Length: 385
Ligand SMILES: Cc1cc2nc3c(=O)[nH]c(=O)nc-3n(C[C@H](O)[C@H](O)[C@H](O)COP(=O)(O)O)c2cc1C
Image (tube, rainbow, N blue to C red):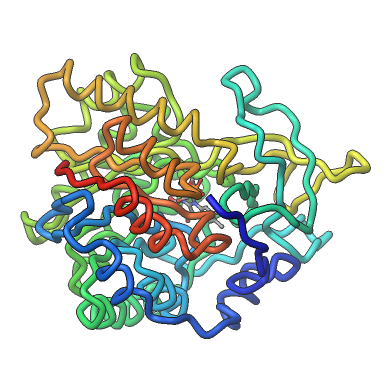
């Protein structure tokens, strides 16, 4: 594929804070590419049914980069079909700071070499500039899970649905519980349920529980690794939702098949789908060896570098679901991680994903839906999942 030069700051100014970007971005006028995509695809495409929303281009945006209506609309105009709001909380929270020693940015670029299993948690060198192809970008972020207060995000979710109607898209609202000092897992589960109910009360029909943010030190961070607590959270949320048709998804991080099988065995009865994977934790240093990001030495790496781990996780989940005798119609596996070009999108489909999401590419290669449409047409791909 022809590689283009990236206008790396067009969607997100890397040297600015997350909050600055939320307020001022995106920084370009985004063309509406939906008509062109439809024309390019013609009869080709991959027929997918995302909880009743039908599309031939099963690519969406995962939780993280859509934190305002302006970012939401930009990704809809890019041609992404399912859009996930950045994870919301029950209270206002800023992005990570370096405990008073403020560094000013929350994202850095890292080399796109594949992260081998044994390398997880080891060092990567960060840079603040990137001259490579948009299809090869890898980043690491220490954004964490900042959130506006419900009084601010609930009207945004409502307005997001109007946009979804206008552009014929589907929306997911991602939420997380907030743990306070002394809270039990049941307290945390109730907070998850409170935020999920708040989203449901403004009309959200698909809710994702983030159980896997590696940039958070509190209990809500990588809670998926604690299967018993994950079950309590999934069950509590399910019991508190008003509408039995509301779909519930769980966002997980990287793990192996044995773990996923144990996880699905106890959580599947309460949920309708799994989104995997979240970012992979790595230590990130600047060239001089110092910590590169606020919030701690380790942070969540994503983009091209995590594709292999992500497709491995999707295959493991699909296999685990099969071995447990759970039907596709009962539990969707939604692939996420390392999708930055059409080939990586296809790699997730081949691994068995019933829908594919990207986060990094939505900021740094927003032409991805159009590129995928062209790829499907050129390779005469027509299939159903
Ligand atoms: C800037 C940024 C912020 C993110 N914030 C969240 C978040 O709030 N909740 C969540 O579940 N995942 C979050 N993620 C993780 C993504 O949803 C996704 O799982 C991960 O980045 C892997 O996909 P990618 O390789 O396409 O980026 C974030 C990712 C990025 C890049």
